[in-house]
Length: 389
Image (tube, rainbow, N blue to C red; front, side, top):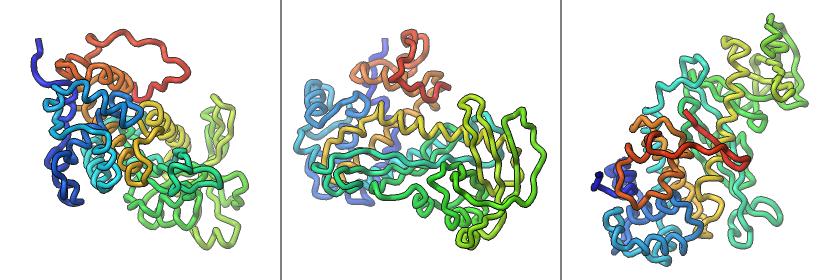
């Protein structure tokens, strides 16, 4: 029988502690801290994410109910609601953003050789944004509409492994295309985007950097056809054309030619029009890449359903950003563990199993292997089965 570490401690062992300490030193996280360190804060908030706690009070009560196990969980300071609330409000959120970025880099290396159903030599990224609603009375800094508060979560996801590569939190007024301003384009990579990213000045910057894009065209886009290529209509491709912009201001922002592909999705019955600066990819591959963009929509739904970013533990901007970044770090940590242990189960199954075994002393390999897990139940309409591979 396994008599080693708690399940929670085994999870935390996969964190790069040296990197975490460097992040803490960089942003002065433990400056003037007497008993409740940044490591304690992170572990308490990670516990809340993993066990689906809905408030600080809920988190503190559950942890103190297992007082004898806190030391073995790596929590050295006393767990109090006021102490944890002060840490979330005062300690620089960039500390946890930097740490999450290091975890993302680790996950990308682990998933770099994964196939995703499309034969590509370079990287492919999906870009999108989602709104997280907030009560304007409690979060007066999160202005969105007249009587509504919100923040916007911009994300770029690597389609190999479905790992969020860049996460940018902005106010609700920001536009999707503004996310392109914070990105450092990668030459040879393909960026797949929806209509909100149609900004020809920003798209031309991607082209100038040697990157490629696939973006869904707006319905009123005015284009002039220059020539057409032959297509296989049985594949759903209606036309594949070289086009130029007609409106003078748009043509000034994007002075070169574009590729326009019209595609009919037989599953939904919709006709979609794509614009791209990549003239080498087969037209069906362009359509397939855009279909893969749906993975980022599932990612947004998944983290909203399974991680605690809809009910926040603090009302300041720093507390909200801290909670979101720790949620992202926990998500990526589970993806890292899944790959390192060679687990053939979904992230949903892993999280559900961990949520009820966090205080047990069972090895992760034994706990998360299919033979040990119960038979999966049919998914309801409210459940998302993301990353089943």
